[in-house]
Image (cartoon, rainbow, N blue to C red):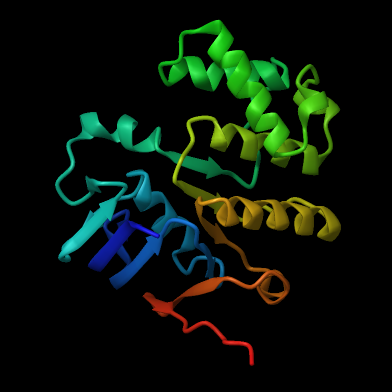
Length: 228
């Protein structure tokens, strides 16, 4: 495993107000991490710092996939974001085009120009999420769970080492949510690093992983429970 995220003693701010202080943690390839905490505790803000949507201040180190977030020029942000897969709670699929159209749009926007390679990559990621037979469907023709699988496929397009999932089960029924979390764990088992924010602690119990907790403007990295 190699470290791909390294924060040391940094502060997260939004609207000039401190959200989290003295934040220190590392994420490595092949790991599954949960980020838990109450609404408003800073989970989403911390995740957004990793793709430079929210700023970081002070501290010693803030590195993501080789990018120095404390000293990075704005012109470098698109290159950072291409290396991260982001899974949103509210899907954010383009409603005016099919599943394959949504995925093709992302690939073209991130520099892919070969029609053959684009089609092959779309087939690959849809197979990875069990949606090979849905490429022609429009988003409104899919269930919530199916849409979330497409969102995960979209996150995988550029073969990211880091996948950030912000409450990916929040709009899903419990059974479908479990399927999505199981899929994300499979991705970690295959070498991706997955960071998932959730308020559903039952998922944490049923699908064990490393846990970080936002509480009292601090990030607490919990020690994993070792089974006997």
